[in-house]
Image (cartoon, rainbow, N blue to C red; front, side):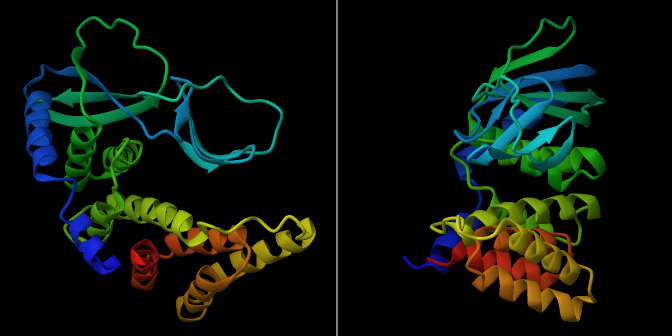
Length: 268
């Protein structure tokens, strides 16, 4: 089966069984009394967290992508690291009148008893991911973005085909579509740099200059900057420079960037 056929199969979603289970999960959430609904699911093996305010993933050496107190960044190469667990993901949904008005996800740790909270226990990761993606599709603001992030943490699930569809769906809230583009670009970064080693002989100052040049291209008019960034993302021999180009393409809201991400994610 070629790459496009594999993509078509993946684009069918996370499976009919997971969809049915997710619909059942959505019904359980909607039926819960007003307040917090809590559940857990398995997170990806490369994801770790401190059970409170820190989630890390895609670690390369001592540098990790991370979320701290809701802000996303690349972790610095410092000497301190919070003690982290490799799972599970713990999801808290704030429910009012059967609707989710807020959600929060952590990785690791343990639940503290919370009187009045509805405990749904552990659910299968594909079931949780499918539910969260459906929630994102109908939600805007922080709920949509956080639902997408929580879905990307789920183990044994490929979310990028669903995220591509969300990013291209004009009926989805703009903030949710932008979040979908961001997480598709994260998957595309990995695909674009898979099998490439960092150039250990590359002069650090030279790399910093090149990264600044990539940023400068991102600030140019789209008809000039986007094609140049796409060329860098496809061909540059330094994976860090490729990642930078893809990151800025993910901020561009340009359909050519989404086409590149799909191409990177579906090629053999």
